[in-house]
Length: 307
Image 1 (cartoon, rainbow, N blue to C red):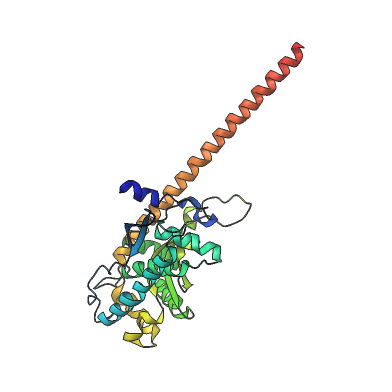
Image 2: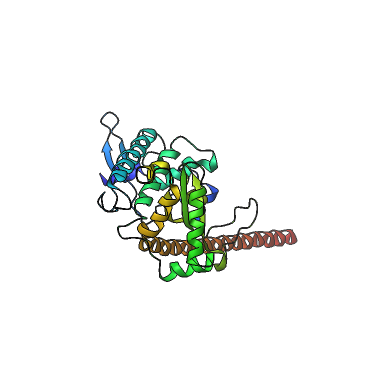
């Protein structure tokens, strides 16, 4: 069974420029993405992977009174479930079937020319990330390296809160607001793009429409809030700013955000080391080729003189 499962996930696809050194797999985040179960198609003897809906990491009433059980039952039990079920239908029998969810997002985003599977893949991933951005008794203030970076990059924790709330409140229509760690290359075609200096590796607040998330920009997501109306209407009606304030003050899991930041920094460092290794190998290969050409030219000269 293990061998068959391996065959199902061995599909290859062209990497997009924004993927950098992430390679075919981008499942770096500590959040839990929809689990996959393998089943055999009787007619074709093929192994297929289906994403399964996983419940939030707490009981559905655990966020009350700030987020009601009714909201979780409706938001997770209906909307999130529909995204996962529709995704399974869309990828069945396609080259996307069997890929990790993050890879499906990157491939189907298609540099902004979005393919049909993207919206359901993005929404499935975003919602798992959202559930794990919250905890009962959350809110308050972060600590350690996360707080230090917030104060460095936004001026103060209070300024960050204001900027995050503004991004969430001003996202027109449906979408998301994010805190992300930006440590990727500049996207400059036909140019040498060095890795950013330490001061360029920073936290940023961004907002995105519909199912879009920072993975498609090669950022590391750390925190998100869902500002689709179904995320808050049962509890707050159309008072989105009240919902955003409640989320930041009562529900955010700064422990989860801190763990994601440490993972992001470690992976950014690994990517740089891999880039340096590849660069060194290319230089050594070029040096070897140059030596071979030089030896060939020397031998050719000696033969001419002998004649």
